[in-house]
Image 1: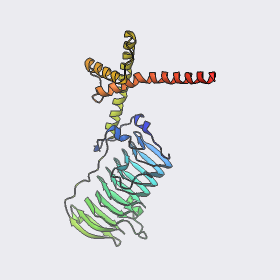
Image 2 (image 1 turned 120 degrees about the vertical axis):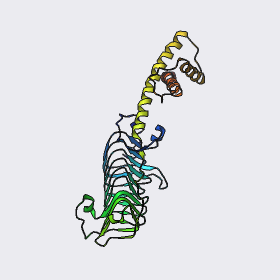
Image 3 (image 1 turned 180 degrees about the vertical axis):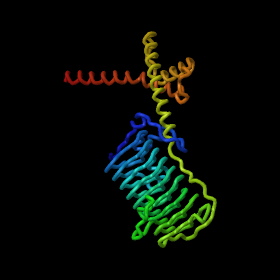
Image 4 (image 1 turned 45 degrees about the vertical axis):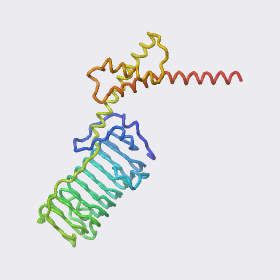
Amino acid sequence: MHKKILYTAVLAAVMSAPQVSAAKIELSEAFEYNAFIFDSFTGQSSDVEGRLAVGGEMNVTDFNVGLLLSPDMSESALAVGGNLHFTRGDVHGGSTTVSGMVFGSELTFDKAVNAQQTVNLINSTVKSGGISSKGDVKLGNSNVVSGDVHANTVKLGGPNSVYDSVSNPTLYGSQVENGNVFAESSVELDSSEVNGTVTLNDVNNYTAINGSTATSVERGSVSKADVNNIDFNAIAAEVRSLRQCRSMAQQYGRALTLTIRAKRLLVLTLVGSALLIKALFTISQPPATTSSMCTVNQLSYLTLASLIRPLRRKMNISEKMASTETMTTM
């Protein structure tokens, strides 16, 4: 989906996202994404050159996100409202934020990976920003180049350790190359290394086998990681409200058109029409069923648009007829 700009996806069928802690964004911000999808999404051997938001489950293979994004961006390049199943691919530019679980293999993340639930990565690399999870973090033969790992439990080992099996001792395991580890419950290292401090609520819950090392292990107060994703439900509600608003505006537009024709009023200027429509709405006060998001200004603008659109069509037809007449007289 090279440069797949799905602005219309914002007005597509709306699907409720999981109920999780979420950050409120304005509907206008949704258009900053190359694709903003409320439903689940499946893709293979494809890419999105900008930002991607998926409200449901995301299941992709040989997939790349953010190919043209600036490496200096601070926002998420990928936001997922459900679970993320990702095999072979990259997320460039910004961070990855997931409301569910992360199941990844052979991936490269330019920035942080943040998840509400467990993060499982095999043969993968997080270049900067680290990993934050309100659940667990399990890394199999994977590296965090720069940044901390913050989770309930942290398990670093070979690929099999991610699936709670015996790790392969011939593999080195996983590394936190330049960062610390913070865990509420426990930390398990198997053939792995932390070039930083491991902090736990209880140091007795730290284990290191098969030559695993950490620079230091300390007791400290560790609470749940702070992970906030897009509030897909709020955006979906706003889309529904605007669709209702558009429908009401079309009804008002038809009513005003009939009124203008009946009274044989002169053609009003664009500004005059807007002021008249706003005044009529203010005086008549739209019915109580109108959503609080459907403001007088929104109704005014959409109603004016519904009035102007037929006029523009007529003007285009007239121009085409005039052009045809000119050609026939030549």
